Length: 496
Image (cartoon, rainbow, N blue to C red; front, top):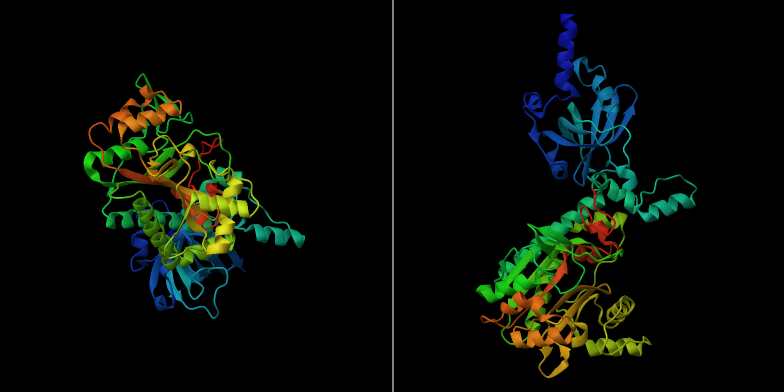
């Protein structure tokens, strides 16, 4: 009995289910923690410890098993041969019995395989396993498989054409089991790209003298004068979730900050079940005092987004490649100095192409898409600004052009034929603001606090807002904003 107990204890030292992560610490002394993504030929011979998900397990006989370990978007092959007390194949059998997606710790020596390992990101190395412990077992039957969720539409079509049976995981099912869906290489890349977009947004604006602020999301009235707000009870008073930081970022400029930006949640109660709308998204907002002209805001947009696109192309090649494999897209075409066109010129281009548009009306989605095609073909860019919109199609707080009030000091920015940014100079003169609101049928009493903000001295100012998810969706040509929202909230979805 004693010898059997000793044998069992020896086995536990080499492999088994871990009671606690603390219990593993002494067993793994001498092995240095390593990130899978950092393992390369230069790591050969190193004794490493890695923790990740068992993406795939394949037994070869009773004494050998191959385990593909995934950590974030990186994978490495682990070779389990014999192992354990006496090398009786117990460790290989233990590995073969692991359910997919179980979290495991592996310790061993990094070695160079005879030929590159296909199907892993770290193709030039593998780990010869010396210790293997399961930290968390996944249920044997997962609701969706990571491999299935990682399959491209092209792969599905090819398999069907060849008469093969493959699982196609639809969008709703992906979102129902988002925690598994997020493990695909494409999703790991999408949200790392999103993080980079936010970082560049902050860094460029900070370098341009902007101050980061945080505005309230609980407000007493609608932030844009519309009806699409989420209403709630605020300690007995009616309130709503902010549709935009518009009022408060303007107040911050009036408060003497000059140039401000915010990264924060925005709430829209629109019943829009489209590819580009969400009920909650991350807003990237900018507001700034103006010196001479509203195009100073356009200058900031130009510098900011060219820097952002350059950064993604230069520093995120691996992530873009991972997205490409599942969701193929053409790299975004953009110019070193962003094209700016007057609204009138855009109207002329559409009319010349045979599209019927109202010269003083707003562009519908089809017209925007068509104009995007025309601009790309004529100017070689899919990122451009359309300036000087008709006043009638802009919000009441937009400054009219001094030389022709039928037009406004405003602009929209388009990526791949879709509007991504709306910006303008704001009316900072309270009398003009009240007159424009009244002319639109807005009860001036309902925007009294907004008007009051400009009665104590207000510099000329302007700004813009853009949705973080929309930037990533359009840069990566993803076609649906739900792919770039970690846990999307649309008119029908409030979970997970």
